[in-house]
Length: 241
Image (tube, rainbow, N blue to C red; front, side, top):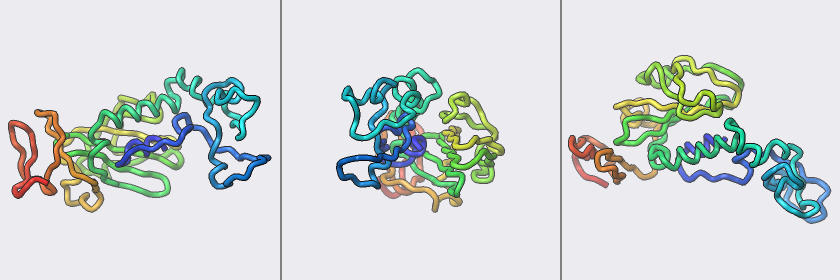
């Protein structure tokens, strides 16, 4: 879920505990009135495996601590390279450092009961992030059927399975485990939102373009026709917004 949050357009919002994969609890035997709908998903933050999960030095907490706090806590996950916390930190850094994720276009390719597949891209940057999320059982996915121009091999920029990071996958047969997510990356001169077949699937709130020569982000026209050869800046034959 964190991979979805950090790669969709907009500001990523995290509810405490999601960064370490804390689950919900069922709070019972409480003396004070409470809202069942919200309380079922709340529990003190699990910092370590000490008393009360390191959340409080008191004899007890008003809400119960989840029984998995011995293994699901911040201290433990800081030492595990493949933990939910380490993946969260990598996703946060990727989102902070990549204009494609901050201001780029969003193009959805597939949404069903098992897969969610979409891209992030930006004018002036000749590469695409392709996000593949598997919410079902282990399966094979053919990306060539979705994007005919995609290379046969693409690189895994980030994965919920850290052992795959940096490796290449065959876009005609990507093996995805149960609940696995991938952020793929490939170079291209033809962004999807410029292609007729994808225009009705691509969206952006405020269109921005990037010049690698000047290293600037600027507001650009709705329809881009020309590129300055020296600066790399894209222009419209009519006007800039």
